[in-house]
Image (cartoon, rainbow, N blue to C red; front, side, top):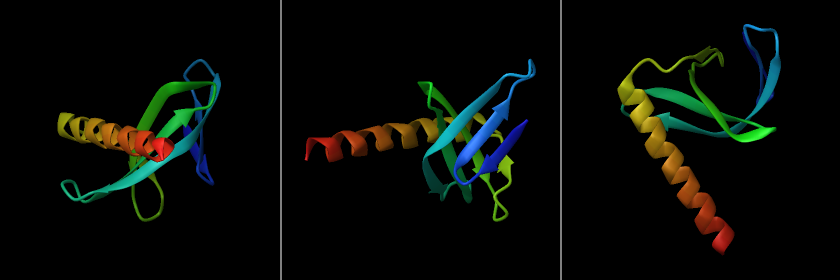
Length: 88
């Protein structure tokens, strides 16, 4: 179960444990005509999750391998931009 509040996503696992995720970045995909948000877990910054979202901010899971491939490209671009900004 997910609940999003002000760029924070509370995720409750099947075992009842709760994890808190914050928005890392968002982007719009011209290919899929969708907005996406990538979230990270503060206690494990390598734990990322991504969803598409609609105009009412309802989250939707990724639906295809093509969406995952595009997400990987977006993550790489984000990492490169962050590395360039920190080098300045």
